[in-house]
Length: 459
Image 1 (cartoon, rainbow, N blue to C red):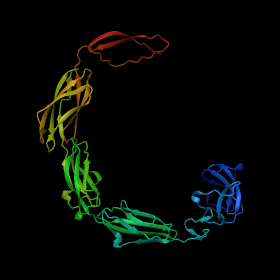
Image 2: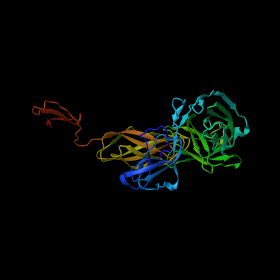
Image 3: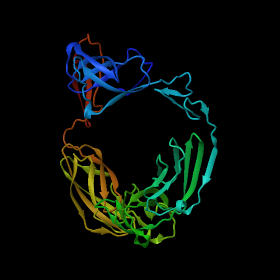
Image 4: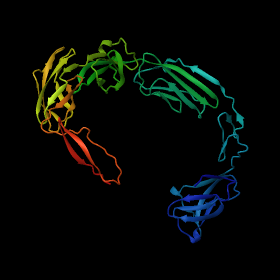
């Protein structure tokens, strides 16, 4: 049911009444009452009645009811509450200096009055800088709230700040749920715009850092060459306020390689898993408060951890001679280029895995010392389908980068073996002609013989 209509409405306008189990009556006639004025109603279905709107009604609020034709009782509405219908004087677009919405003239920005006949002269932009210490200082980890006074309800607020997570609500409340400390103040600017003009309120917000991350250990991640940097957050006066961000900067060979932020757990512990590059390098990780410079002198020695990748080279023969279905043994010499021992070294075939496998690896060492070399003997097994191909082997040691070795497999042929070169011959001729006989010379290694091949075309 529409709550209102203009007094000069269209004569074809209808009011639709929705409900449940409307009774059927003779000729589907209903009576619709607007106060004491009756109009014709029509039964559409058990859930809908359509009513005509009376003409020449005076502006006002009228009690609305519907009565089945022939009955003397109005149908009750939900919860037995009264329903009213309002007739209003429509807004005259020719007199309204704004936008007509029903009976109301809506004023645009810069105008006011019942018909928006008044032009507002906005005041000049007012810029105010606050210096009250109760507003310009916050405690790290403790909610920060500031109320901006508003003179009008229709006010637009805009917040500009470098404080991540700070926001302003429509009622003028500036909130920061969990302030993060910083050695330099944050800047906060709130612009308040209304019909009276625009003003800007600015202040610098100081939040002193109250914790410092400490790196406690560097561990290996399983059998991979990944490293886990583990640490704990040290709070001033042991005032732990839960999860906090920690900034970790990784330097590779003296150049910034990665800059990430991790979050500590509720106990203040944090962990970062470092994935090394493909080349052996020297790394240094510096943990810091996100609001402090990287080279802060506070606990600097306890916030740094450094290490170098284990690195080694492999000396090997460029070619492996093998026979199909046979076993071949090759020797590889591993040289440790780093300053820490290498342990747990092994080798695996990358390609071709379906034709070349490793049966046995012999090594007479448990580790390779710094700048030392050790020998590894590998026994390969060749499949019957092995061809001359380039094999790729991967050598690995615990907590080190991997080395790829590529060797040419030279297969020694035995017996008669036909190697087509080229592998196929393509001939073109008119389809209406008889397929010709073509003489082809076939080489059996170094034994040359002549044969005949019939080329058959299929349509």
